[in-house]
Length: 113
Image (cartoon, rainbow, N blue to C red; front, side, top):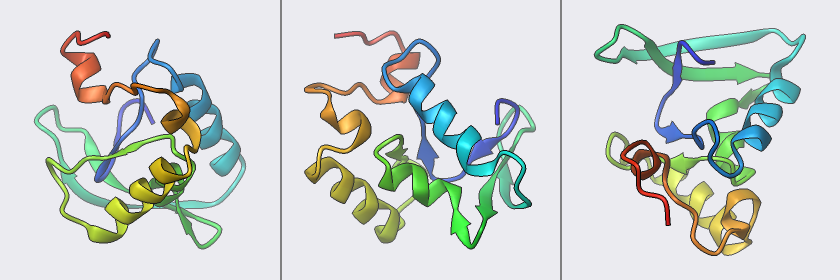
């Protein structure tokens, strides 16, 4: 998924805590499975931004449920996605086990507490 982006969510960056876990989750979820991608838009670099579906599941949503992504509220007002993140946070699932998880958009800017 390096050349394309998942719509409305943001996963940990390489070398960021839980990055490898999120990558493995994606691999385990879709490896050798039939997937469909619904392209939502293109980013400024021409990469597709979309929704990935497999086995009657949405990968974007499954990553939020597993606590391996943030709902990217800057670009999405989807209440269902926010509820999935909120539930994972409340249950301290995945990256929400960390006492101070750093959002990927801050990590990319060099914020490292």
